Image (cartoon, rainbow, N blue to C red; front, top):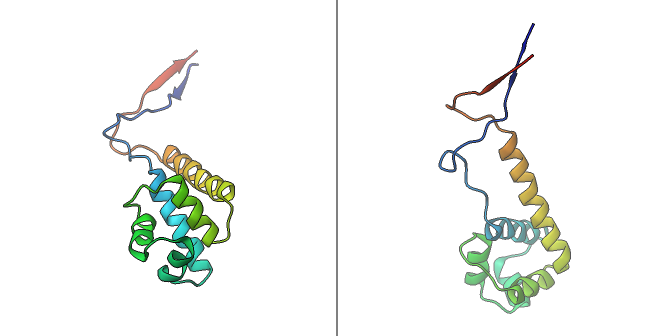
Length: 115
């Protein structure tokens, strides 16, 4: 007897959740690191040589900081640029795998008839 095997589903770009942006993941990680250290925005910003408002905008994903700014903030939080970059990349990979693992809602399933 033939077996029915579901095919992998792909969604149209409009039906998919957008991928998270690098600046969003970076900002969330910077905020988490700052909170873990028990610091205020003003404390970290002063050590990094940026304004508290600018650091806040980076943490909220509203600004796309230069590599020099990222390095300055990483230094203020006592993390290396490579460790910070790797942590952001790991976070993005984790989010992407969670999005890919979610079943599609409202779409039609495709099936392959295997003999």
